[in-house]
Length: 150
Image (cartoon, rainbow, N blue to C red):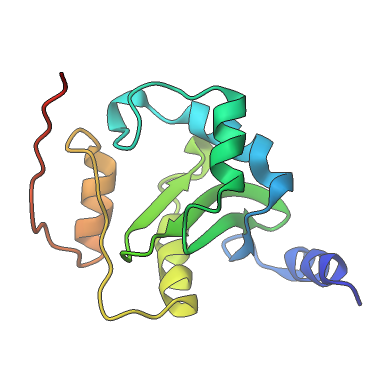
């Protein structure tokens, strides 16, 4: 059975709150761009303004993360999660599925699939929901970073 058929099979038999991962590939570029546009700009760290689709596509195709997954609930893409070379986690869920425990399940699955001795989460100080989320999951604050733009 080809991989897509296996994925479809598992997605169909999952319960409503189960999640699965699929590694990011070219077919996910459009979803990831729409997902990025949905995020509140005040919570961003990595970029100050929204990239163009072309810039985004180039970024995705550069394979910037050690692991990068699309998060599925049943057969629906609900978010993405990545792990950098420095063990930094980025976890983003679509707004309509936030607050339902799916972030927790996604974090647990990421760590299960990619065991490390230490994980980090860089969170914008204005992103109160992410700060609460990571604190709830036993992450502790270790630094504040300051920036000067000229």
